[in-house]
Image 1 (cartoon, rainbow over the protein chains, first blue to last red):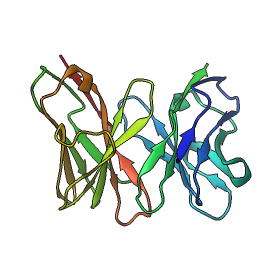
Image 2 (image 1 turned 45 degrees about the horizontal axis):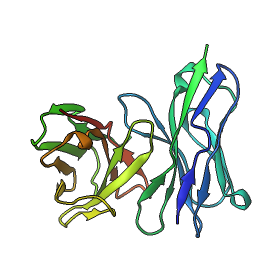
Image 3 (image 1 turned 90 degrees about the horizontal axis):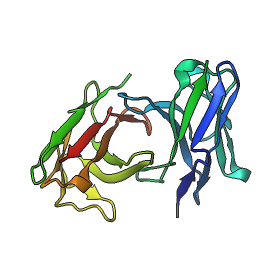
Length: 113
Length: 116
């Protein structure tokens, strides 16, 4: 069965530090992968997506993610975290042909001043 | 960018009443909209897929008579929670797929439903 795993429920980093949020997926075919951020009172916002091609994907707000097929991973990274990055982050995979998403359980990021 | 408006943002109702939640794509057409439910500290669970002009497709375990979905136009889908009970209290989120933007879904801000 298709699934998405985000192993870290909570992550706390200091402002200015680097960040990596983990995402592992289980999917038989080539996956379409997404990272979304959810802030209170706002809808989920797309940070970046991977469909094919270059496995290092650049997104908005300085985020990037790397698709590693051998590890079934799509980890999100940012070199220097800002206080405004504190939010909930969701990794998702789109099931082929249906446009349906399967979401991971999310990682809540806390940023220390 | 594409905007999805979801209304209301919060609703409190008495047990046994019905509640309607609207999801509108403001600046694009969406033949497909999705409805999700999010429990506290948990992920988004897809409830149903709504296609304009046709019946919604419900995920396994979702009661279609409890959660009525109507997609009357290319910009509006509604979710009606019928005869709501406290266990229906949750955060409901809609998303809309942009026809012109490959595989992009845009999400509403969600509706917090509290059933007393």
